[in-house]
Length: 115
Length: 113
Image (cartoon, rainbow over all chains, first blue to last red; front, side, top):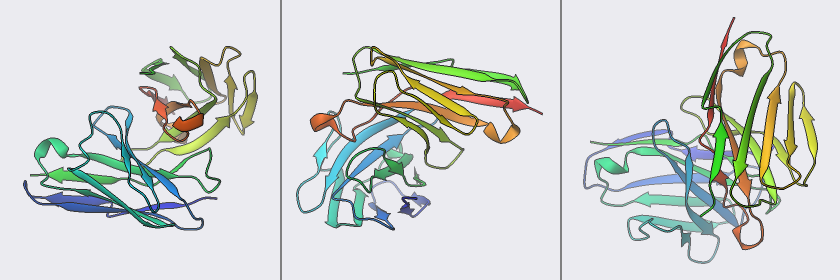
């Protein structure tokens, strides 16, 4: 089946620093990947759509200058949380599809803790 | 924006019992998906539904895409302890919104041996 891998699985950083999260499609190519965020005991919320070779599109309320997305190849998208603050602490999950359609397969997520 | 109402929020059942959960939407979706999430992990796809009225099974799981395209249910038969987790419904409106899933609030399932 389609495998989406994220790295790291957990990261702790200090307030004000930046953190990069990688999302890879291991056995397929993905021109589009999606980044979701999940706060404790809440559902997943779409943050942005990562497009290979072009700019990411962000959902309303998500700061594009704070959450930098780079989709440099057909198998890799990165999310960089810049100048992280404690309120950015969350579970970040990426998703992609081998068919460029549905269903979406999700990575194992990255738990970000900002101290 | 679109919202999904998922119910129940939580269920406590005995092993062997059947489980039913559902989602309703204020607007139509082209695709309904059901995922299971274990603590600290990403959601795992259980069932995908692509057509109104579609009824699909995956082992002990059965899900249906409502005829109005505004609802879906998931049934789990003969529950076992490893069914424990959080179940999410998700809808996709299609078109330019492809892949931009709207998730329900989740149903926390606890199965007592």
